[in-house]
Amino acid sequence: MPKINIKTKYKDLLPAVILIIVLVIAGQILQPGFIKANNLVNILCRASVLSVACIGQVYVMVSGNAGIDMSIGSVMSCAALLGPALSGGENLGLIRSIIIIGIAAFAIGIINGVCIQKFNLPSLVVTLCMGQIIDGLTIGLTRGAPGTSIPDALLRLGVPFIWKIRLATFVAVILIVIMYIILNKTNYGKSLFLVGCNRNAAKLSGINVDMKVITAYGISSFMAALAGYMLVGYVGSAQLYMADEYTMLSIAAVVIGGTKLSGGKGNLVGGALGAILLFLLTSILLA
Image (cartoon, rainbow, N blue to C red; front, top):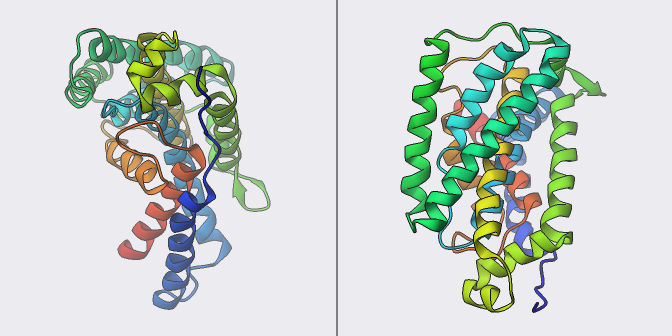
């Protein structure tokens, strides 16, 4: 298989880093006290949830063919509502619910991937339709009632863990590291980059293109479900459509972080930086 340079390009991350520094300085000028620890930690915690959602979006975009996942927000909202409900509000039940919701979310992504790859349907259309289906199922299963029985273990995600930094941030870092290794150090990840760069070359190299792309969509939905758990743990309650904005935010964040919409190039660190940048900007504009 041809060797692909998949090392993180620091120059691709530089614009996001510079913009973050500029926004922090601008925030302090416009709002004295903006750089206080509590405010920055809150922004970092919110960005951590988005960073986890961005992981799957990066995988999908790297796979190429203008791949994009528009069902991320719906999967997050569904997981945020049904996950705690399946746990019964108990810590022991939380593991069971994560397994069930995780498998269901991965299956949803696989269906997206099959429709896109096997039937040659546009990813934008397929994932938008899937998002609508998930929203309908969520309404039917919950009857529109908000979720309030959140396990204590999940609520700890919004609690300071080391110094004032919330546990959710550390969970996000761990997930990013794991998925970064998979994307950049394993045969699957290297093959996915080649698929995104040139699918014909990938096929000639003996790569199962269909499997790589379909799995990328499965990973995207699975990571979205985990992000949904993190969101409800941070907020402390769940309601319909609570994560809808995360679909477009995940796309914006990964593009800001250097991921190409055309595929074959992307990194998870850039997505995390893009998430921080977006919430810094939001915090300044809404204050």
